Length: 173
Image 1 (spheres, one colour):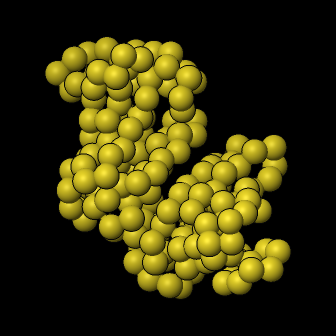
Image 2 (tube, one colour):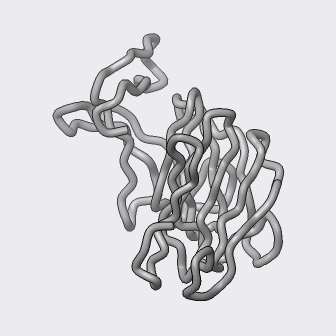
Image 3 (cartoon, helix red, strand yellow):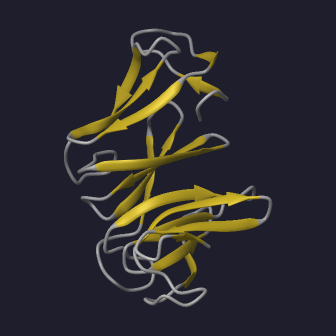
């Protein structure tokens, strides 16, 4: 969201929400909440806390913003937390595991224009979910050939294409 227009919110005791150019949503290792910073780096708001309940995190590491939703990769809980831009939890996508719709360790999330959610999992796969969080499909397997993955570390959507950073294979697919 760096440099884009992002809606940020004020503390609960305030009445107004504002649109601020160049606001930043941040996550830090060792800190189990998300922060919203203004252009000068001052904390405007924060949400989440340490734990496994909805709206809580254990090791949040990546995020994506799409329309009116914020998606937070929660490595410690093996899920994607979905929030309003005001920080209210809406749902969680995924759970700990190796099957369809589950994650060993989710690493990255991106969203396409219709709201489908794509998650890179260290289990050498990308999983696709509906805007409602329903598992749709997955692809990838361990290996070094084209289309194979070895610890995908990032996933991104642009111009109708899903791009995957393939960490161990040192490539972008």
